[in-house]
Length: 396
Ligand SMILES: *Cc1c(COP(=O)(O)O)cnc(C)c1O
Image: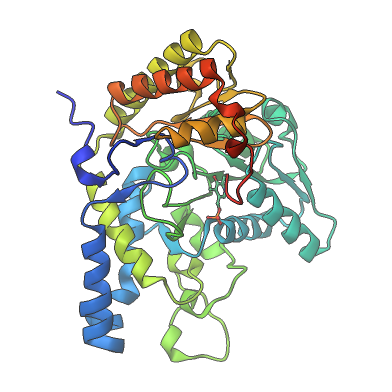
């Protein structure tokens, strides 16, 4: 008997079908009270004493330990804080230090721009012959060679939903002597993961997508436990120091993953994230995956039948997709705006992608069928031609 969905655990507005939990997870019930407790009782009541008395200083570690089982990592192997962009930078910088004789960062042309921007910024700063290579995703396996210091890939492509074979690519990177970094932004909480079994050196991810931590919730970074002592923190913040309150003149990194902490943790966000992560204790990720494949298969079938003008750009084989499905349509932006105005929230990605996320925690088959019917209405009536759907907002 399936234990999904768990709609009663979320505050979802009436009349909305939410197919964008891959971008910003919805508000978990009780999150407001969790935030209020931290603000009023802890901050308001305890003032600075809360760093000790309310466990604020350990909150990043506590939250890291709640994320660890979701990505198949051991306790104590995750540091949380900052944003994913920062964690990508830390992982890359540490990876390059592990392979000082090599000068290539290998990613792919479909990677999320910030990952590539962080890589090229680091290369410019190092100013020492480094380069970032970005072949097409399909050409990545052929591009892994002995020049490569670090392979930085996003496990599930944010645009197409295509998913790499984590173990196979990691093994190939290792055979070539490269360090493997996985960006799990669209995987954590979406597909079962076993980062330990993959043997990857580093993994990074964010918590406001499938993990429902709220806008701007802190990111995480995993470093393989046997490598901690060799993991050189590029951002030598005081909270990554072995003894922050020794106020040493010299930087001395903590001997645990804590060395990948940087500065003062965002306690209010962490309190909400901790609350959001509690529901994962009772989620079987295998069951979640099966449910997500069922939802996305049903959606594809309905959309292809009802809206033949939309072209599936995600892999057709469910095992090769994460938990999202994308369709290309020339007027995809306007069509998505019209869809959102009709209560079905997905999003749009350049140049012409209508993107839909499937999150079995709060979606069922009726929702996806209803979403396809509403999409069909918009496509057949060409509602999207209305001038009000043509203006592009700042966030798409
Ligand atoms: C969402 C996402 C990010 C976002 O980075 P932030 O620093 O949290 O804004 C980065 N990389 C990938 C692959 C993403 O999907």
